[in-house]
Image (cartoon, rainbow, N blue to C red; front, side):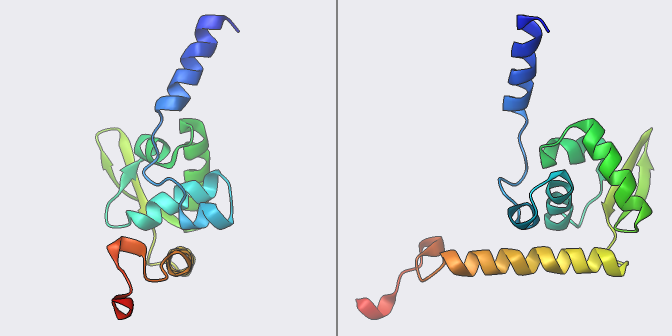
Length: 130
């Protein structure tokens, strides 16, 4: 691989921005599927193309494509509509698997937040010490 191509690949990876730095599921279960599920759980009100899922999850298009198809076969993700040629996907909150994953993600996030909160998070302070 030529030097120019390597630099371009490194540049592409550096510019890929995830919507979440470290989501709840990725925190416990590191991997591409967790990154995708974190994104779909947090932003569950909308649907997304595979390109959007890949970009916002911090995974490649190929990985997002493969994982979305696998998750769709399991009923965790649904194809909600088509916009032009793009198929749009979202977490299937009507399936028990989708609801369970969504709840697990929320439970992990709450537990992580409560560990980091002890009166200091979000600008809160312990007023009884004043």
